[in-house]
Amino acid sequence: MIREKAREGVRKGGSRARAGLGYLADRIIENAPRIPVRDLATLRRQFPGLGPEQLADKLVAGAANASSTVGAGVGAAAMLPVPPAMPTELAAEITGVAAIELKLIAELHEVYGVRPPGNLKQRSTAYLTSWSEERGIDPMKPATINAALGGQMKRELRQQIMKRTVRNLPNLMPFMVGAAVGAVMNRRDTKKLAARVRADLRKVRVPWDELPQLPPLERPERPLEMGEIVRDLGRGTLGDPER
Image (tube, rainbow, N blue to C red; front, side, top):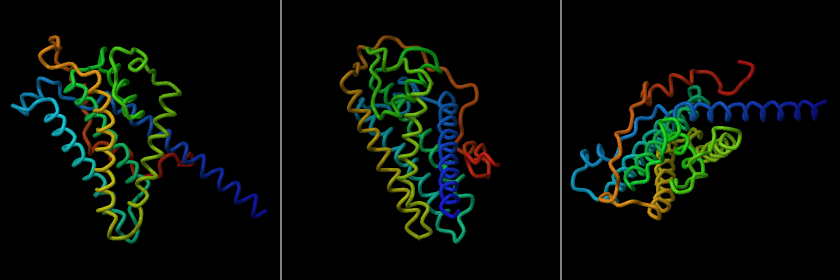
């Protein structure tokens, strides 16, 4: 009887975890087209006098700082004797860092002159692929930009989310090191992702003086704000089918 109950508990726990990961994957996919992205012309106006590599360095530094701030916030919450709604806090960190990194990936593609073709939704799909596979997009290879938001994409996203969740486990420890550990780990992982994507983009980069005249990037109808991620996640346990 005890063994059967234990197996049942493990089964329910596993199904809830999978449901939670699926929910997060869906939220990241939904958020992607709403992330504001600066095109190359806007970036060059905001950072005058910088070349492609210097500009990319600036973008990476800004994204690493932003993801480290998200990690520190959740780590600080974990220091409390009873962490407040930790599943929701952790989910907010995962989706928040994903939004920061997706924005970084999109703007790195702009800097290296390899904007994926298509409309806002199609480019968002390409950036999701880049994020989930931790690589740059090659516009000369249609297979790298035509990935559909189907089962394979969602499986890859779930794997990415699971890896990030495991990385974030130190944030859940109720020790004073929580905030520092969360900040350092997020900063490191965002920089590592950027290095991989930049290595791919350098192979297919188009010099600025050889770029065709590109139209400005369209703005999302409802641009995503970081605070909205936390509000949308609510205060319950994610992926719990009984709630």
